[in-house]
Length: 339
Ligand SMILES: [Zn+2]
Ligand SMILES: [Zn+2]
Image (tube, rainbow, N blue to C red; front, side):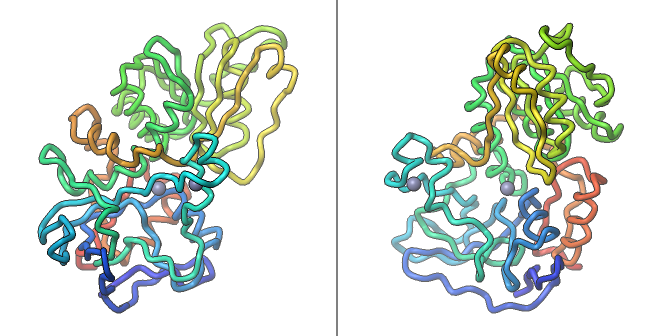
């Protein structure tokens, strides 16, 4: 079967690889769509991936082979459902399975993701896509689960004024989910006019350029402060600006990964009692709530996903364009598309 394989040196190539054989307790899934994630970009362009790895973890598909006692039949539409935490490691014991130490990451040799035609999956590690949701947008389940988790960590409330810095694929999803959860005052700071328009399309109330956010006075909040800021751009300057826009007891949620660490004024953190938190993974209830939200019709799926899907042969090119900020929303790879 064809697969987009990481070959080292920051490159992905399409290769023929053996079609995987499901082991005991596993089913074979034909991948319908797989989103390109920011972490895939890091794995490839920053060379964390191991040569031979097949990346791609935001997938939906159709069961192609299932043992009779698996509970699944050929043709069932599914998404992978992340296992909850192990329940035993330090973070799990502290009630934070989202950072379970036994969750596998994608940077080991032999990682088998979904930038390929077929994938095996544990029969008990799948959930059914509801009739109300098409198979392709169901591939947003994983990033939507992460988004729901970030909102819960931030404890966002409907009357909060919220700032989002960066309207790439992550920021757009945060905006759309905030809106779907009843938050109506959402300001988005984004330098690209294309992405500012996309932010409005998915539910932002107001868009600004980063320069429009003023430096705060030393001992006072800005004129129109925010209760919560989600930093989704990965830029140190955006994180620094976002912190300066917070109201008393405000929370900055860092969602975008980046190279340069931000510098924060600790006195501001103290006298405003600000919180800076990170949000990385999903809740221990896995993708269920995300799939429900995607199937509810409350999200503008057409604006969250790029209109044209790509074949495996264009994954590398799409990653380079995403890294340059040229593509506003989620790129879906369809391994079945002819290149
Ligand atoms: Zn992802
Ligand atoms: Zn654990």
